[in-house]
Amino acid sequence: MRKSAIAALAVGIGVLAGCSSAGGSGADAASSEGLLVATTVSPITSIAASVGGDRIRVQGIVPEGTNSHTYEPEPRVAELLSSADLILVNGLKLEDPTMELAEANKREETPIVEIGTVVLPESDYIYDFSFPKEEGKPNPHLWTDPGYAIKYAALIRDEFSKADPANASYYADNYAAFAAKANELADAVRSDQATVPAGNLKLLTYHDAYAYFAKDFGWTVIGAVQPKSFSDPTPADVAGLIEQVKAQGVPTIFGSEVFPSAVLEEIGRATGAKYEESLRDDDLPGAPGDADHSWLGLMKYNFATMIRGLGGDPAAIDAVDVTSTVPDNAVYPQ
Image (cartoon, rainbow, N blue to C red):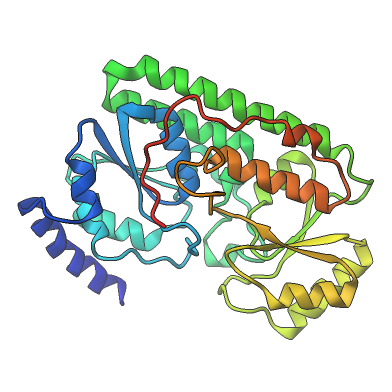
């Protein structure tokens, strides 16, 4: 459906939502007390839940296991957006259709906060194979870097405190607990990556979700299979990646459990590298309610998988406790 059609349809649905409380996840969430916060991808939903605890109603929009770059929200999402007190998106051009739907349906006073766009200076934008500069869309995957996840949480804390000053100290305490856990995980990664054989901290992934992490932690992203169009790469692209993997002796190449890749299997066969298909970009482990179904659980799994695949020992990462200090009552679309 064309974007203009989505916006036009959403306006009508948003108006109907204001006249009726029947059906729909947005109406259900709006029936409870407390601020209603609409979020997009599940890592942001999880971080918001870690800060908001039981004082904020957090409801995600993008279903887990979905390509967030190409996701176009169903018209019923307009009801949630028309009811929300705050809308949190990643920004950096990740969720353009959702942004258009939000602008068409939100209440005038409801702010839309593009978290990534706020915390990342333009001078630090990273453009790469999947996100070329000429397209005008920088790599948006800040949340795979613990340092940026902490900045996300700090901005969310400030937004919650602004909207609900009576609970500001509660949000501050929850933020501090999240930041401590994220820093513990970051320290564990730095400790465990020292066990990886020299020269092995190299990533070839299906989707280029680790550019900012790699820059901050001293890893090298040698390539990504998924091109800017999110289609399959050309034979020339594949041949070039095979040569890179052979030349650099990469022991493991990493796929995505959301995007099974015959191309990565082919690269693995051609080079002798192991193909590890289970990395998660924004699909949290387990199911909502599980202890590891969180940003911390997501990144603990990914980092341990990468360290192990590259020949290291993720003992320190495995020892990190991802149990949240507050209840996670967020709605995660499945």
